[in-house]
Image (cartoon, rainbow, N blue to C red):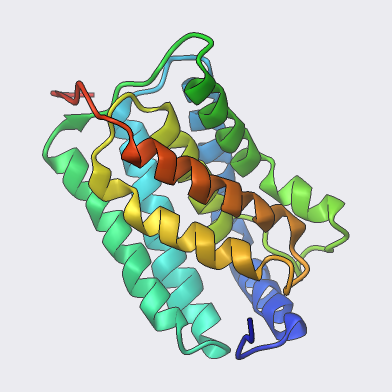
Length: 213
């Protein structure tokens, strides 16, 4: 795979993003860590999860892709559009009062979902352990932890709408395939996310509840 930018240019974009927006990405990380705790402990509210997922995708699309990544990659405009569409899909699900219910107990799917939720929450630590130094490194509010969080949500949910799967699968393949070229080992987990989401989407769906949540 040939990319239209170098690894140094890629990290420079993160440096500009992190220096300018660290308070907001910090708040998003705290909010996501809290929602992850409620999901893992079985106390999550559907409306909060849907709103946070929409915020993740909208922020990553409009702020990261459109305002920063587009400086070095023209394809970022396409990515921005896809991310905004995914944000709208979550907002639409919430507006239709699709109440996500979440699996409880020691099931394999629940364990997978919890694993991806935790991977999203500790993503900045994984990046640091891979010998990348802040601020020239992805921290939070960027596409890869957003996709990991969404993977955890969709795997943990009992019957999420299939329309919420396509773009996370697509980005998992894009981000995961570029991980080794850009020396970003934590992003290799996206390839596992693509496999898990595809298998989950292909299985029969039952019991989508509606109502307030």
